Length: 90
Image (tube, rainbow, N blue to C red):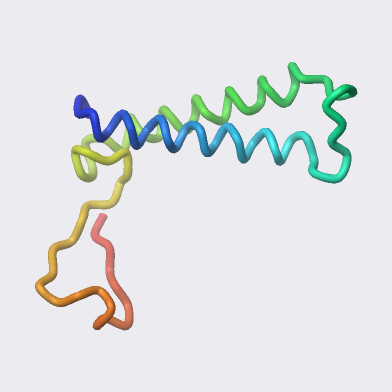
């Protein structure tokens, strides 16, 4: 959790969550930048990004130490393209 890779991954996930939540709360068809009540979508998006942060912190001891994911990387000698279904270990 205290690696540069973990924090880069966490910030990327938080930024994506924030942007996706902003788009979802604004609504693509009714967006008018001059008539939006900005505090509401911003507040919801910040809340979603914070929940994303908490998820990353909870995942830190479970997965790869350089990632904010619950998944651990698998090591195979065969290329991934040779497998029909890859199994990720939790």
